[in-house]
Length: 287
Image (tube, rainbow, N blue to C red):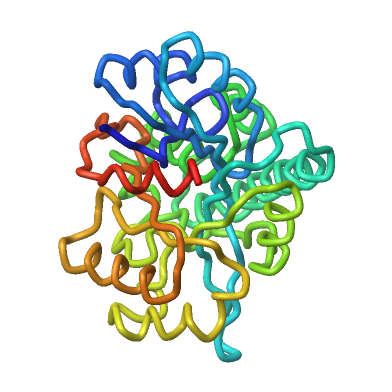
């Protein structure tokens, strides 16, 4: 059985393929159970359910929420959590995600203002409202820094995304919508869903690595500050090493947490269905 419970689309997030293309690729790769988990958006879920039915793929509703996590009075860190099996028609959930979307657009404008300060130092022509509209027009899903990075490349200001972030977008960042873990948990659980800590040891993403790279320390943090709010942990991920996966499987079993897994595929390159995720992950959702 092929399972992938962490996939992004271009239609509603920052993937490279539309929702239709994602499902066709999943069918071509013989994926049996999947979930599209777009960032702070459930706008594609109705279409995803219909496509899964058409193509004979088992489907679980999904979303990836960015949470502002406060740890021991230090600066807040950004972490990701996956919501599954929620009611896509719930108005409270839709309204909250619309608020987060609007904040993303305000944040993007503020980032551009900071970029203009940097451009002035380097004699680069400043971004205008026309540039903002050009970036917005390139966005199919949820507006984020990767779209600004793409525009910086297009304008010839940087050569690639890595340079865009290293030179400008880290320095010019503006805080995301301050969704707490307690709020995220309540939001998903109140609509019949479950909340899963995504890629806790991702060396390249929003993860507990920003606090500590030590696996034992990471799980102590989860035990102390997160257990009451989460239902599971993502044990299989495309950037996990074997040690990380085994550590989190053992941790999940110890605390009777659901175990999930997914490629976190943004189709750059296409990783859907490449992880060896055991069948019992699917059984957990059937129960």
